[in-house]
Image (cartoon, rainbow, N blue to C red; front, top):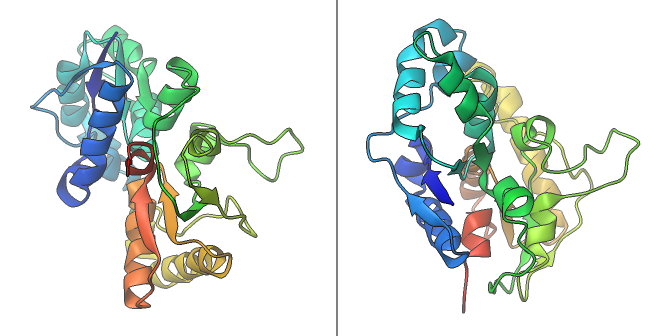
Length: 245
């Protein structure tokens, strides 16, 4: 199979190590990876702000860059969900629909498509998992706690394959961190309070690291940790799954 690597703009600008880890991990697993060099933003910020009608240029460029591949994989649940739900084209809607069915967040690609059962990764630390709202309720990476249904967690399944890693149990496993894209700008005080609650849940339960499939959430939590002069760090799940001694 040939996979096109989609690196969201904020990952490219602020967390390039997560992008590199994603590429390296996929290659370790025998995947032929291609990086379309002309890719830019998927248009999610505009759409979330009520200007989806102005994001058609982003849609057209995304289709130009990512057509013709078996799969498209990205280390970002929120951007992948946006493409899955909102990628359309006035020029070629059939191609847009085709791409919507082939774009995957990294964790779901590893579990659902590659069906990974073993990883040669080592990360000897206590880790708390943050389930982003897009990943949890949009991509169904884990079971929502409010449902009376059998629990599952795709990130947990992968982290269980990492040597030395201990997952800490949280009091509220799938609570929102408060980032919410432009919500953290429009409702800063509420956003910060939610983020502080999320950080507290991890720190009081002994986490050394907070991980997630969404670096947007981790960026929000990292800011709070930094201001609190906390020793707890954030790390994208790709970096853990790719880690070695």
